[in-house]
Image: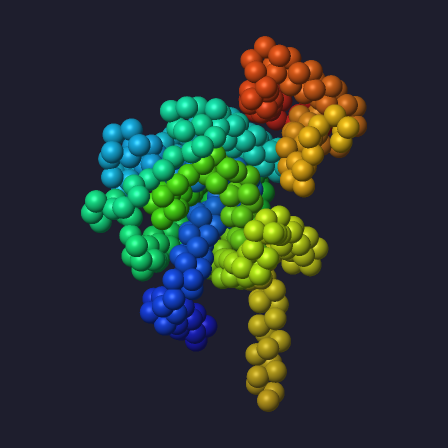
Length: 325
Length: 80
């Protein structure tokens, strides 16, 4: 009972910190870091549903992200619709794509699944780079100045911040609900052993498809939010492999398959990335990759379970020390 | 390879991805499989660049890769 209440206290403190952050740090620079952090946390949490809980390591989630980013801007470019109208369409398209991808690729296991998802994402990226309707290699642009709030184009970072925060809360809330339900137990059974899960009567295929569809819907939303904020999308920033890799690293760093893992991962990685970018500027365009590579090596070598597992091992020790003191 | 291709610090991404695809197509752990898969992918890339255009060569490779995995989830010569 005590453990539950301390957890609840932690969640309250975290929410309070996130709510107050842009008011305390009011310079555009820090607000922008906050917005980037929220976006990364949203997409990593969305990936976490299928990659963490179900253990299906997709490295092609950028396909949903890109689809979610392209759809609103495409509607704006073609018919001048406000980007907000494209968000649900992007979600529908992503869910349809996830089913189309999931049906053939869920027969694959381990590396083969990861490879197949990479292949599909790359396929879409290259295709979008040659498709003139979606701007080919140049990409698409959103409205330069908002005609109203529905264009989601604001001068200040503040509206973006609270919009993203609300979506993050929604994603985490759904993940929490999934974790508690039979669906969540199905997912962890599939993660532990697919064959065993099937022999116990878990509808493996259907469960995996549902998890992928749910994850795709949220990843697509993250993509739409990115497009709304940046007002620009091209094949590399939408479908590039780095987009997928970032989701995987953030979730793995914090702890894949835990509710707050991706949030913790983003909390560490995004400020680090911004620090690297501000310190080295344009001269070190590859340095972000180096940081990612280093983190992959460190996680794989020392903490495959991510920071949440490290914390679980460390917590009893710290408690004992606190009691002794 | 540096003698035949334009080179830049991030060029490894393109080749590395195709190399991964080759190994997965041949079947992880199978030496002969990746040899055959490598030959196949090279020929397919060259042929599709010739007939369809250089932009589409990787699309063809990735498309065929996914299609082949559908038929043989363990790769060409991998053990199930």
